[in-house]
Amino acid sequence: MGNSSEIYKITFLNKGKVYEVFVKQVYQSDLYGFIEIEDYVFDERSQLVVDPSEEKLKSEFAGVKRSFIPIQAIIRIDEVEKTGVSKISSGDNVSPFPVPIVGGKADRKDS
Image (cartoon, rainbow, N blue to C red; front, side, top):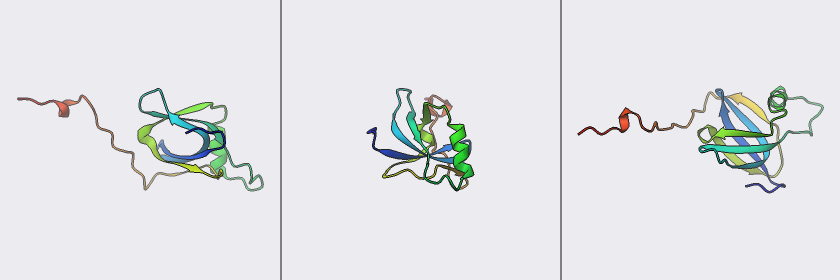
């Protein structure tokens, strides 16, 4: 993934909310268990109507060069034809992906 003309819609969980952002670059990170996203794209078409959720995202990601998102927080990655409105919504209907705990007592086999 990563041609400059491609745009990706990334949907992920962050602090109990569902974030939906548009980026030009997405790839598996060298940091184990993370997806890297960069080159954020915000909807510049609708200057007359200001979406408070998108404005919050713009300010939250202002100056951010690259984000590392844990794989288990990713809900969906879509390649889209054009950007849309980035938003934050409640995560009421979404649960984090269960992650097995490795090396705990449950993994021990006593004879």
